[in-house]
Figure 1 (cartoon, chains in turn blue, brown):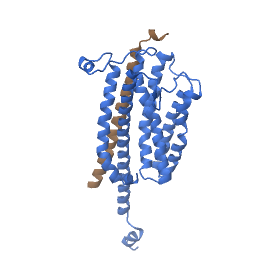
Figure 2 (figure 1 turned 45 degrees about the horizontal axis):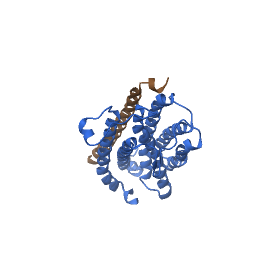
Figure 3 (figure 1 turned 90 degrees about the horizontal axis):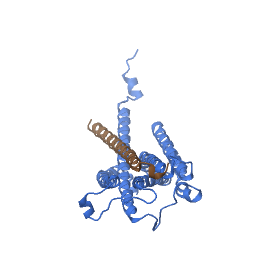
Figure 4 (figure 1 turned 180 degrees about the horizontal axis):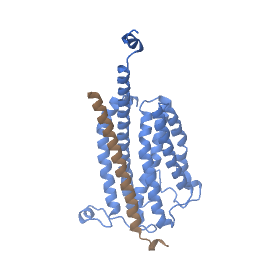
Length: 266
Length: 47
């Protein structure tokens, strides 16, 4: 992992990995969006054995929202797990890029958490009959959005003031306590939210919904990876610009001795 | 109001619209800030 501590090596890797992840992720996401929004499919698609999304017995057409809600939830939680791992790498191994990767994850993680909350709320209105309930799953997910906002504010403030990135890293590690709470909330507390539908090796979801859902999870994950790499490249470039400007300013600044020698004697 | 009486497609379209707007904004902002920062670094290197 320390091979990529050198920004030059990391940037060489990121230069081809960013478009690869972006194009493959975007293609899958666009396919899932088109599939989720199509009431029927064209003949040539059906000829390939792909059927339109069937209406769910309980959820009706709103089952289509799950293709975007579930990946958003997965990436909101996965994003903070990434922040916690990067924070641990910074605190334990002092990996130079770990702090940057945590900062790079925070914005896409927050956006996916907000998308999860918004799409869940839109799905809840016709299915549960309410936009929002203060139950364990929804509340802990809202707390995650606030944690992201707090992390972003803290990371930006420490970077601006030149303080140690370890402050934000500790916050990133402490905030990770919320991830198992979100995951187990539907088991620990009574909730309108259904219990886990996907567990290791088991699925309570019909194949007609499961396959597009897994493709959506893969597509959004690839896109998330591309966005994190874009953010990392931006943060590295900003740091390099700042370092170069500081070096130049120091070179241009005349030394006190030299200044004194140049001053005319009164 | 029961489920059958609600226009379900409106909710589906609203949810997808939220996602599309959020994704376009996130990707656009990430790409633009990366390009701007990298361009600034290259300009500074040349000077």
